[in-house]
Length: 222
Length: 389
Picture 1 (cartoon, rainbow over the protein chains, first blue to last red):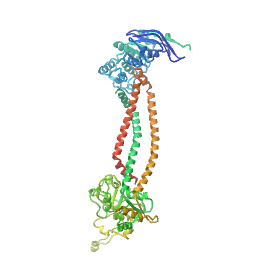
Picture 2: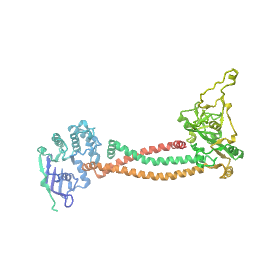
Picture 3: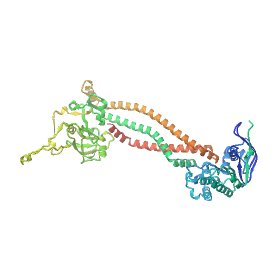
Picture 4: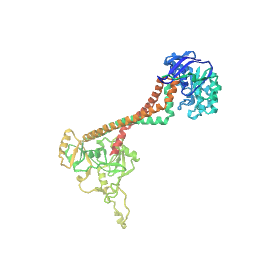
């Protein structure tokens, strides 16, 4: 699903520099990335998603070499192939849950909002246990419910890869495991792989593989 | 469409903020337009009435006060001219003099004592009832009828001029015999009576109500003194014959005299007769006075326009700051949209859709306000001119 070779990326001269010699994520795999804060975990997710472009190296996602795509193609690729789950859910307060789930269709012409997409949003919401809360705004939902909405939003576009950045970081201990299991279940249903950054060590056993990110990090000599 | 959908959703959810922005922007757009409309209409109304009044004779003093009193029935009280001036004009054969006496009021509306010529001169038509025919009759303007809820068959009482005027006359009760058609001029706000009725209100003319009638004397009834005070006087068929005026009518007052000259030559001759600046009277052309007033108003308007522009710039800057801060607060949302695959252009389109929607709503409200103002400008200006009076 994801193949990275000899990747290097830096935020300007003398700043943080990331180097990933080799990394692979298989289809359907669930991989956790752990490491200290500031080690570049989120940067790696942004590189895989095509939000950032590497200085050197190659990133291939679902058979597409992301690092070679033009800006517009990268956005289209990201919208259609990748789902994001954020630590702070990143829901829009002014949209009800249903419209938050369908939000990717509202912001990119690469996705067509049709009846099938609406049905899929409804089905996902029911599967995530928020089928009766689709008309509520985020402020009317609990933290766990908000993250379920965010998971539905990540999956509604039928992505091949879910990138999760501390998705359980804002949840209480009881909810963390439930939300993560839910993410895995729904991703498995959709046939999507999951690459998750996490600091929750108690959740690590639920992943198929754990990557210690410290091994990818190096400090620029300058 | 998606940008509009999201823009509407955002504005609807944050309706309080949106409402304030829309109303403030609408006000900024509406106020200058409405001011311009009302001022233009005022100018037209003022100039039109001034130009429709060829010459005005009055006591020497403020030409503006004289014009405002005679044309707009204002509260200004120019010194009255004597009715002998009316006779002089009549006798000259150079024009038709129409006296107007505007010294009194009833229920907040000015009583205009005049002659029947005034109705022909102003082309006033009776909507209900009849014109003035008997001493004491009153014909009221359309706005007076509406404001007081009165019509033919009701009556009005002249307002006392001074609570402590112990030697003053009683207020006069006047039957309303007619209501005028709406004209959107100060005539709508006036109570018209014959000038002799105005003199009765002033106490120059009066009637007598006998305490003891001839029949009482014949019946041997004793006269009985009574301390009851009559609250106002009325002119009735029974007592109208007893009304009379003391002194010469030549000495009776009028606030001003409108003169309709026969032709330009007559007007020129008349103006020449009142050129003496030492004389007690002056003959003016109201149009010139009104144009001077309008010029002053528009000089003030230019200043107001400057103030309005500064306030508008400040308000737009405040709105711009509010919108900018709003966008700053939404930086996270914008970042999320970009991560999910949105182009930066899409985000800008979304923000632009919100701004344009706000401006369209504001513009719509301002436009409706402007249309309402334009449609009612004449009526409002007529009312304001009368109110200002």
